[in-house]
Figure 1 (cartoon, helix red, strand yellow):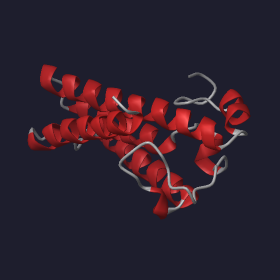
Figure 2 (cartoon, rainbow, N blue to C red):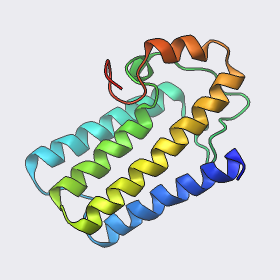
Figure 3 (tube, rainbow, N blue to C red):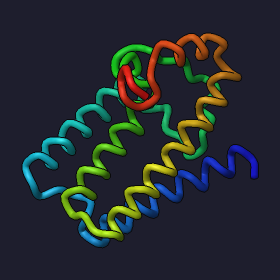
Figure 4 (cartoon, rainbow, N blue to C red):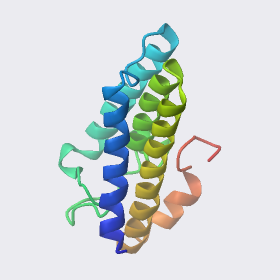
Length: 146
């Protein structure tokens, strides 16, 4: 399967799993700690979108040709802050409404987003020679850890 098709599949997988969480009322948190995590995730997401620029949304893991490599703001903490924010938001809801189904959907969201991260990194390495150095100094998901 081509990277573009794989990226679309991974995106669809994450969206479908999020839709199941919405339909089963398992995405939006009710408990204060989980709500706080979701609010923090939204703020982190917005910070990343503003830093990256709104024009950068794409369904496949090959950013626009006019894109530039962003390494500041939340991108100085982790390489994929938008995906990290989506993970945190989804898993806060899953943890607050824990069931076999919600956990399975959380895993599918995570798997789809991880696939997109890897595909995007392959593209970024081919497009921006400086990405290798950035990837060495900036963790993919959790600052200073992963």
